[in-house]
Amino acid sequence: MPKRSGHTEAEDFTEIKQFASVEEIDSAVRKLQGCLFEVQRLLSDSVEYDHERVRGAQFNIRVSVLEIFGRNSPEFGEYKDYTIFFQNPRSILNSADREMVGGQNQARLLKELPQTESMLNGLIFRLYAKRTEFIVRPEPQARVAFENLKLHPLIANACAKLYRDGHYRQAILDAAISFVNSVKSKSGRNDLDGADLMRKVFSRKDPILAINALRDRSDEDEQEGMMHFFEGAVLALRNPPAHKLADLSAELALDYIAFLSLLADRVDSAKRHK
Image (tube, rainbow, N blue to C red; front, side, top):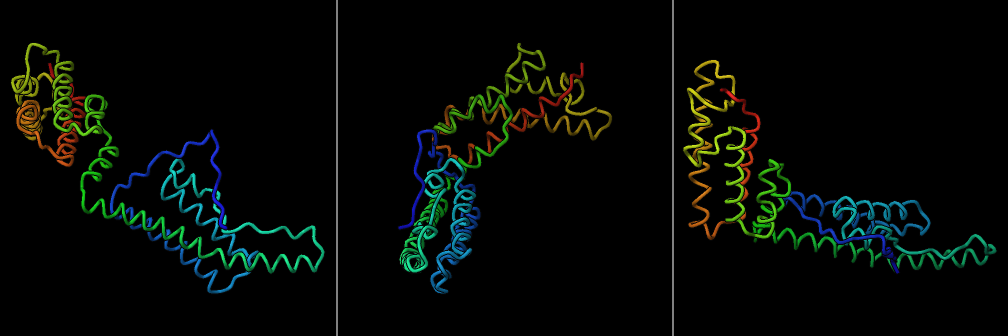
């Protein structure tokens, strides 16, 4: 029968692959379908058991599983050393016996190829199930997208665990609080808070922190526009989530957190104006 890899204590194949999109899953399906077609051709062409095409098919299966699911995945742990079948040795036999063993190997190959087809079809079916989950439930997509975000460190430290645990309202609230604290810290205005803090620190004409060189009216317009972004983030996100957004979705929470991270980045790049 086709052989799978044996697990050792040093190996840990527990990392479940999190696909980022339906397109990524479709690409994985096509890759496995290519392996399946290759195996089916071995059978239809009655390829000799010791032909390079057999070794090539085995190699492509192993590589495809690695590329699709990752090195630490259960799938790679199961199939990283996958062999369509093990040959009986012939080198120490006389010519008559070698011919007999060769015939046995060929018969076993043709018998066991369908099992490899079944294995590949099982992996493809698993991918189709994940695809259906993406279509029916958008939340997994948002969670994968969250992991791929390059969040500002302060925002990530404040909200990452909360978001992963599904506490979206609290994640936004903590991220917003962290953002406000970063403005207080950089501006030195710990005596102010909320919208008043943002209007004072990022004012158009006499800011404490400037997001650009303030050389002309265009720079001043940008400064004022960003001030309204900062002000709006506080008014819209720091307090309302604690009271009104009990049914906040993973997707909307993702957008809010990404927005707060962008604002935190702009605070980092701002320069003291006075």
